[in-house]
Amino acid sequence: MNVLDETDRRILLALDDDPRLPVALLAQRLGLARGTVHARLEKLAGSGVLRAHSARVRPEALGRGVAASIRVELDQHQIGAAIEALRGVPEVLECFAPAGDTDLLLRVVAKSPDDLYRVAEVVRLCPGILRTSTSLFLREVIPYRISELLKAD
Image 1 (cartoon, rainbow, N blue to C red):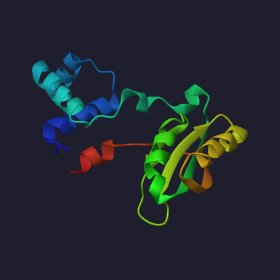
Image 2: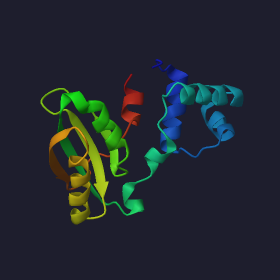
Image 3: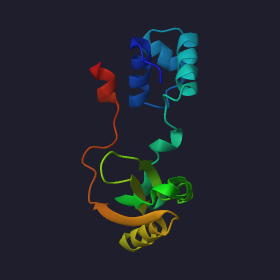
Image 4: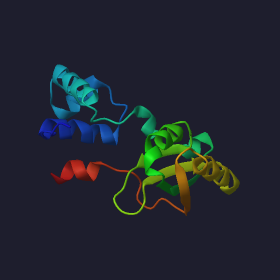
């Protein structure tokens, strides 16, 4: 992944505040040429720096107000099959491979506690999954953020 320079950081911070800013207005606010901003945004998008626009949609808006993490223990010979099956579960928002005794860590959403039970069962029944453990999120206390990191360096 690319190292961000000061101009990239300024553009990303402005977009973090208002992601719908048109390129011309963004350039004006930052005192940069419109072509510079457009080229930088294309470079950032093409290099994978920017997340998909759908990452800004809150699951609650889709009727999925219950969130949880699911720790997964795998049959190590079937990790590929397990991950492929998990890709097919729409309620699985993210999947991480952490260090330690957990093989995969999922962030999932559901419509209700009963629906969370269903989602956890769908996950548990994926090929290669030996055991799961689910933890319900009661409240989001620090939402996903990146602006503090952009300011830090």
